[in-house]
Image 1 (cartoon, rainbow, N blue to C red):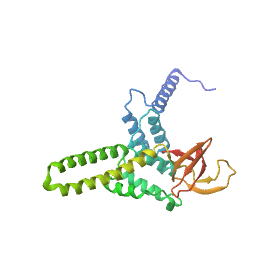
Image 2 (cartoon, rainbow, N blue to C red):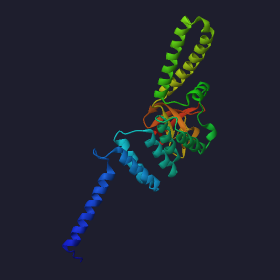
Image 3 (cartoon, helix red, strand yellow):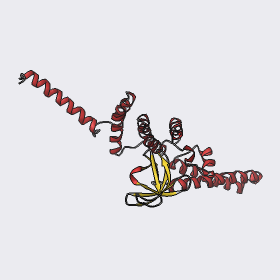
Image 4 (cartoon, one colour):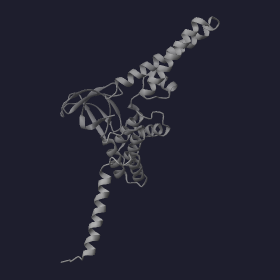
Amino acid sequence: MIILNKAQIIRIMIALLFLCLDQISYAEPSKSQNPDDFFLKASREYEMGHYDDAIARYQLLLQQGIESGPLFYNLGNCFFKKGQLGKAILHYERAGKFIPLDSDLRANIQYATSLIRGASSRETMAWHEKTFERVSGGLSINGLIFFLSMLYTLSMVLLIAKIYLVEVRKYLFAAIAILMAFFFLGSLSLYGEVSTMGKEAIILIDQADVRYEPFERAPVNFTLYEGMKIRMLRVKGDWVKISASNQKAGWVQASTIEVI
């Protein structure tokens, strides 16, 4: 039997107190704690290679309702380092809603998607989306709205100028036509972005069989792989009807995907 003196007991109690305080500060960023400081602590965990600890801290910030491009981007990096390609691409895609023009994010998405099995079947953009992305640089929804507002305003200014500036009417007509063409392409892109909100998801498991009907024994229509992006069409119990980039449709279990 071990007998402890008062000094040893006090030292043990102090050690336990500090351990508890450390766990409390780790478990949840307090109201008095600056979220930026908590974010930096999570980033230090990532730099030290403690990816699980970093993920836990980042996700606690999300639970507090804090969302940002860098937060989702760092989460994507953590999952990528852990070899979880699906979750990495999922969080890169979420980061793209906030910082679509970030060069590091674009490079990481491009590299991560290149690792997807069956990469040739990845989703491709429509012609108008490709054209407008070259001009706009791939803006977020807020950026698209601002860009379209500027195009519309500039078109109206030129239209008014066309009425009064007779000598340059032919040049203004050409400029207005070009602006309205980009406005049309941008409107299509904005419609596409808005129509897919909450409907796009990422495959999270290594291989997902897409079946003809929403039950386990239904014949397999085709197969998708971790990291692929799909569009959700309908939910029925534990199954989701999805559409892939190859325009094929079928049913997958809801547990195999996560909404962007």
